[in-house]
Amino acid sequence: MQKLYAQKLAGVENPEYLKLDLANPDDHYRTIYYEVQTGHLADGLPSMYQSMEQTARYTDLKTVIKNYVDTESAKFVVGQRPLDELDAFFQELNNLGIEEYTQICKDAYADYKGPQE
Image 1 (spheres, rainbow, N blue to C red):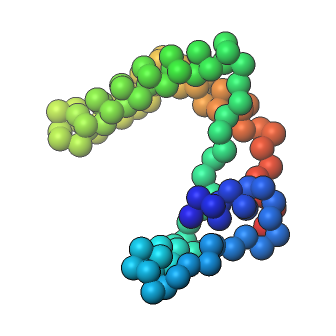
Image 2: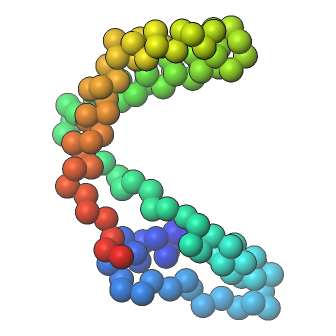
Image 3: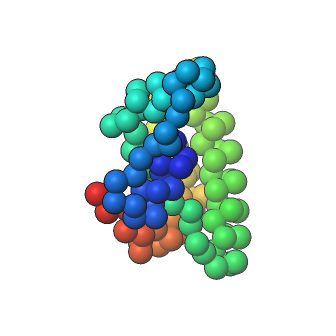
């Protein structure tokens, strides 16, 4: 799958999976795996390219926000925090810098065009 995705990102016109020997159980498994996923997977986001300052700020925000979201989401799921506090939760995320975090991501991906289909 990675080879196919790499070909697609490189702009190969008709990317093809490697020719595999179906008599080999491992190759047979890979072929089945590829055929099942074909047409069902979406391209992921590319790697982000940022300055050192942007990367440091992104990492700081991501660490704080992810830990907070993981903790508070679990509280909502198990009932330790009522759902009527959801608006407060989103305000808390704003206070942690979620808007700056998403803007950093948007800026980093702004020039990415992706493979042409």
